[in-house]
Image (cartoon, rainbow, N blue to C red; front, side):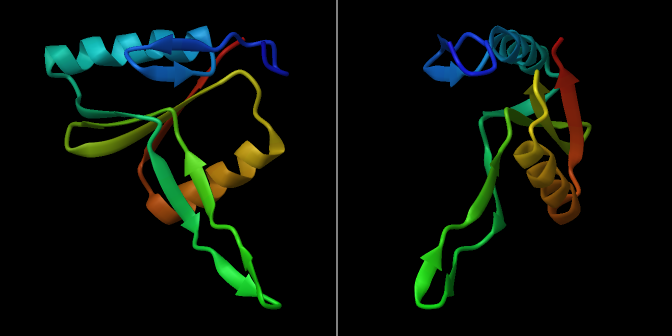
Length: 110
């Protein structure tokens, strides 16, 4: 059990942070099989800022790991299934939206 009380689930070799994320994965697989979407990616990682040196020390790169990405109607769509919108998530989301400009869907879990 995690600090947000979600249950981690493994399916098809992927580790999902919640049952809601896993359910969305299966929905997207069905959509891909039906030809509605294509190129489904699970947990794609996007570079928001490269690593850099400061005072002789390396600062780590900043990345954003989405839950899913796929192509629909020739547009890249990125999805995140969220139960808790942490301050770090909100900041990375803003940086991602500014830098990449992909269609973004946030699925809220209650």
